[in-house]
Length: 465
Image (cartoon, rainbow, N blue to C red; front, side, top):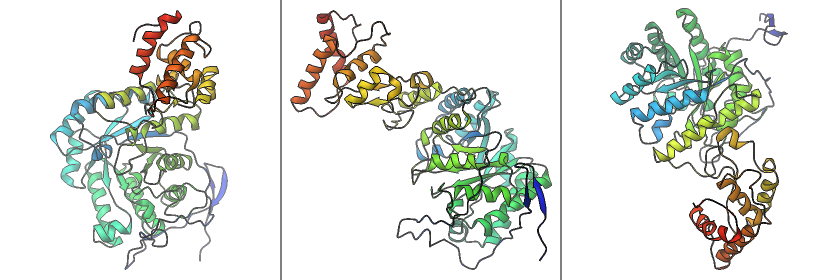
């Protein structure tokens, strides 16, 4: 057996052993990892304590699938709605274009009309890309539209290869490589969507397949992107977890053994086990430049990684927003509510109507003294959403005072504190409601009516609302 070569790793300046090659492992029966995915039991997370190093790329970015995967789980957008949202994504991404791409269907005239209109905007970012069926005709359509890249579905688990496609691994690999070659021959860069990667044989199929894709890209002089798709949300980010569930293990294998560089590697997560955001962040930390998202996480089943979440993950990891305009997130939420009739769950971070609303009296008292005590950051500055206190029997005097100061946007000179007689009177009226059996929070309409009636009696000058 030949000894492996020793070489200098230019990324970390350490000597390393040349990595072994991993050939395709053909099997007679599908490997469904029944030890991890018994189906009649809850999936299992196993550990072998093999830990891979952090490998954060020099640049990281966000890509968007709102008009593709996101659109598969809701009523289709009109062309005009798509263009409006696309404009907002461009503004949100800032001057550095940190929302790098947005992908579209091309099947219908409506889809293509939206693509034309978005491309006519002339933005560098988000770049308009597509997702198509793997056919020569569709590749030509992509090229005729002036697109440089398209997504192609290449399912990689034995669940899909054996049970859905009724192929062997060798047949699937040869089929996929033929399709990718056809795409490359049209001059379009393929983005290979490795569906169901977290139930796949990583070293028996995924690594050898991606290695062949890398070779094809070199042959044609066109980069082949890899999108690692956690289709069922099985990925975990725990150190030492075994593949195929280990996100960092997958990223490490694709980079180290298949030769996929960071800039061609992207993570696409689903939220079936509440891990979409943490897994996407992990993909960044261990080497993927791109994470694929949709607005508000709208997508198949439990949804995709929320785009707005990764904006704030980026800021936390980099220590800066790098020019991203986060107030657009609130504009998008309002657009979805008012124009599309989409109800965002009220406690959704950053965009739900109650995400920075407190109901507890002791918390309201803290907010009144210093909002930093109970607000995650300056939500007024970054999201145009000042912290709010809802009024109920638990809000206390401080909660009512904070509600008035926020709703009427009173400056420091005119703010009311909890000792103001008007505040004490309003608390009496609120307490009376609950003493008589009320169980819901007070509505804005009710509170404004009380204030309109009581404020003049106590010499407090507030506009009638």
